[in-house]
Structure formats: C-alpha cells, structure tokens
Amino acid sequence: MSPAAPSSRYATSSQRHTVTSYWERTQWPLQSLYFLLPLLIAYEVGTVMVAPAGDDRLPAIYAERLLGRFFELFGATGVYLPGFLVVGVLLGMHFVRRDPWRLEPKLYAGMLVESVVWAVPLFVLGTILSGSGAADAAMAWASEQGASVLQVVMGGDDEPQETALARGIVFSIGAGIYEELMFRVIAIALLHVLLDDLLALPKQVGQWGAIVGSALLFAWYHFGGGQPFDTGRFVFYTLAGLYFAVLYVGRGFGVVAATHALYDVFAVASQLQN
Image (tube, rainbow, N blue to C red):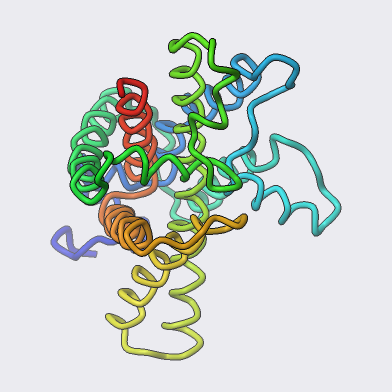
C-alpha cells in the first residue's frame, strides 16, 4: 500500500498507521478510552462521594438509565453496567481496527485543550439563544425528568455552593460520556446502517442523514418524562446535536464526549454565579 493512500477511520491497519499525526491518533478508539477512563472513574466514584444525604449515589443520567434498561431486557442489572458498556464498545472498536496499544499522555493533554476550545463556541451559542443564559437551556441534559442539574443535585437551600458545584461537575461528566455514547456512537452507527446499507441511499445522503437524524433524536430526548415542548429549546438542542455529531465524525468519541462534559460544566458554573 502506498504511503500516499488516503487513510480513514475504517481503513486497513496498514493504511491507518501510515498516518500518525495528532489529528489521526486522537480518533483511535483506544486513545479515546485512555483519555476518558479517568473521567469515567471520577463520575462513578463521584456519584457516591457527593450523593445527597440519605442516598447511596446521585440520580443516574437519563441516558445512563436508558442504557441500564437495555441490559435489563436480558436480565442483567447493575449500576456499573453502562460504564462497562463504554469500555467494551471502545475496546471492541479497537480490536476491529487493530491500532497500537501505546499510552500517550501528551496526546491526552492536547485532547483536553482541544475539548475546551470546542466547548466555548457552543456555550456562546447557548447564551445567545437563551434569554436567561445557556444554563437554563442546557441544565436538562443530565436529569431523567428534564429538571435542571442543579435542581437534582442540590440537597437543600442551605447547601454550600461548593457541594452543588461538585455535584454539577459529576453530572456533567456523566452526561458528556453517556449521551455521546448513545447519540453519536450508537445512533449514528445504526442510522448509517439503515440509510446506507439497508436502504442503499447514496453515500453522502446516508452520512448526512445519520448526522441530522441523530441530532433530531438528541433534541427529542430532552423532552421526555413529561417535559413540555418548547420550540426555542428544541432548536438549541438540535443545533447542539448537529455540532456534536459533526465533531464526533471529524474528531472522534474522546474529544466530543469531553467537549460535551465541559460545556455542561461551564453551564453549571454560570448558573451558580447567578
């Protein structure tokens, strides 16, 4: 295979490994796993450490609960099963691709900086579209009933602000990982199979149909649990879903999950300052 041959996410091993730039390696599933594993562990530990008094852990992210219910269909239960699913999916993608196993700490530092850069424009967009700030539109992302993150994680009116911030950060990490797994990794893959493989639509139609379809599903998801429909919020969620979908396709799961989590952290911090 010529070194000049184009590389892609689905290329053969010999094709892929001729390109070893930062932009290529950060899209490898195993590097995403290495990058996100500390955040995943922090979320699982944090849900116990900062749980409200009398609770074993924080309420689960809605996407996390949906993943848990999938396991229940097969008789499997456990609060940590969704986390194992994240690890299993990324490891499975790695074994299919046969990328190198090496750890690259400098790579993960770059991915973190890049995620911050990608999170800022979305936060600005949310602030512009929401009359009361991005937080009001975005806080519903992490709770089952569409209530704000702060409403879920606050233990009471006398709760120290530091405790609320810690709980908000934990929720933000979970939302970033589990919602991106559901709506980018799983939804885009399934929609692409439907449109491209089963319906045999043109390649570009299948690709963009999967991106747009996942964004609409992402927006619809935020009005579950009896949450009243609001056109402005639906537009924001759809635009955010498109943003994340394009970012996932172009930059991989690790970067988009961290970007989503950081956006939610920005929104929580903004709300606490009001």
